[in-house]
Amino acid sequence: MSIEVLQSEVRALPPEERRKLMAFMVAMEDSSHADYAASLAQRIDDASPDRWRTPEQCERELGFR
Image (cartoon, rainbow, N blue to C red):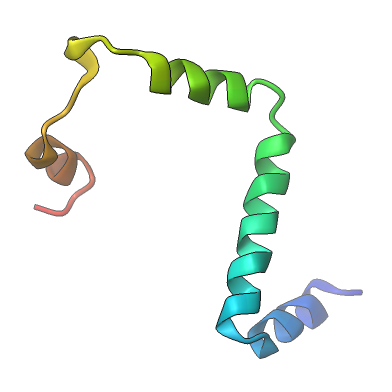
């Protein structure tokens, strides 16, 4: 199956099915990075205040301001 056929099939999916497909693809991509889960857990568990950001800093860094 070509990428063009896949893209056409995905376009035809209802929104809920596209969301399920996106979640599946993200999970599949994440699983291909062996250290991803450990790295993410380490970041979540990091309570160092020097790494915290205010909402304003987040908006600025993400380009919302």
